[in-house]
Length: 231
Image (cartoon, rainbow, N blue to C red; front, side, top):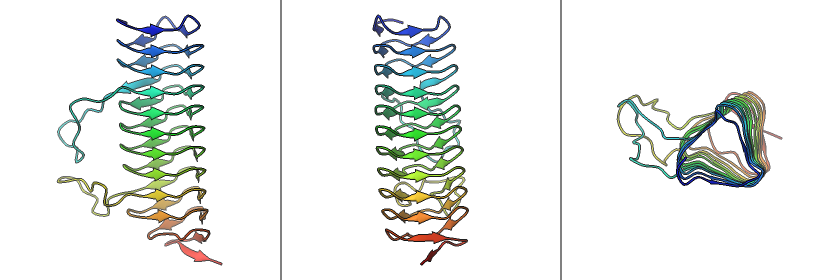
């Protein structure tokens, strides 16, 4: 724990593994078997539960379409956050204040999460996902790479997002061409699937179990397979 910056009011379990150059704020609680990779910053009043891994660098086995960088910035966690048991937060993620990450959630690298966000149990995000202030992502939802979730968005349980209609196994990744955007205040019903290059407009509502294949206009309701507007 070389060059560890540790406040006197923090409590760290004896079997937690704290890397070099970590910064741990006031009244932080770190439970058993937590792993903090080097350089991790933990804000005041944050609590990290048993078995969580913070700052893990991504590692491929030569078969990824997405090309990984050689190095990554450390994780930054804001004030008053709660990180659930066995959550995994990859390197280069930045979390705002009062963020809740549920048990078993997994966040890939280069994510940004704003203030007062909930990412519930067993949710997964791919790389470069943005979730802005006051949004809520419920259990077992998957947000594909480069998804943008704006403020005050509600995404129900078991929602799936996709970014590649070609279902690529080898070759170049789709990049930013098929980004999914959930605009401010929209609501996504449980079990829905959102296909690539779809924008869900402000305050739109998607009914549970829908398959969304094209943009959804703001202040509208859509449902069905494929999802269609309902008056």
